Length: 476
Image 1 (cartoon, rainbow, N blue to C red):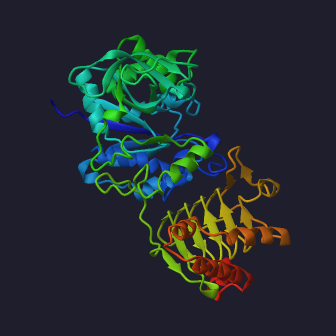
Image 2 (image 1 turned 120 degrees about the horizontal axis):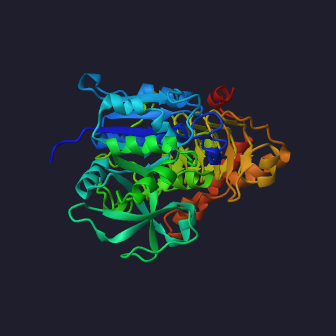
Image 3 (image 1 turned 90 degrees about the horizontal axis):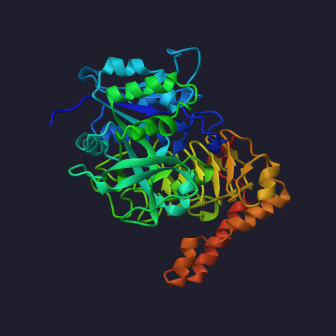
């Protein structure tokens, strides 16, 4: 089989309203995720698949996204490789992108310049690993003109996805391929799969097209008046009606060194709750999504931050992190971090507690402060003795977002007021709680209760003492 020329297009213009306030100052694909940016997952998957001619279509608040791509994703131009950030240019009229299909239509010059045989189109706001070369080969062998990647989901979630209904017969020689019989956006119900009656195929927002067929479909869509200019809502149904659309079952995608636990992991992080849940998937001893697969790495901008450090604080409180991920530059001095993800240059002070939370770059948690079930965006300073996530009414009164599930979310640089006496008392009680890991150790007789009592006493004494000189400098 002859080698096909492939152009990859990353759709990265999304506004991400459901991720507010994390998208108040940045595009959705630029939202940080566990030390990466969301766009890094799409770009890493393409690069690892061997596709090194990539354009990223941007629009909404794209400065941080453009800067990240220009500083991080540099290819060997001598070999004709590139990752190019392309803003909306109004090449086909005086309008900005009207939808995902219109974004590609307005950027048709990119396809003309690259002259590809195949165009791979992917979203930029999902967390997953995928070898797109396997999908492209399935596309070629099936004879499809358009192929949609699909992930299996429980039937009860059908009303939350674009649903793909298929013919029963698998295409001979094309692994994971079935002809699409219908593509329906968020139906109330859908039939189960032949081999899994309790599941359906949901569109992942990743597509493979024959280049000439995509150009023709986009031209015809642009000429219509009754179109939403959407890839899933308009372009794929166009191919389904012509009997030219196939599905690629993501469960057949094989990633080197994938574990049974994280194989075929895919999560749409389009909401605050799903964004939080995806972080929690990372931190178990056997993670649901494994960031440490060296055979299929996720790439991002290298940091100049020093290694993470865990040191004693006042009254010999021990700085420690349990069941957590900490990035370079993190300093935990006499505080306790549990079940959390800390990005670059986070500081956790003496006697502080961070539990079940996501902290982005350069967040400072002062002495005795407590953060629980929260997402804290970059550059937030939490004063000594303050609380985040302990009292929803208090959080709302200070202008913090509290979701229906009880997550507290602070935007980039949001001000946290100094605590009053009642809040300090609340923080003191929470900070003195026994860490879960210690409780388990006591229950298994690995640690004595006397030792735990001493740890708690040290915590309380430290919180009541004057902060160290080092912390005082950091807190300003």
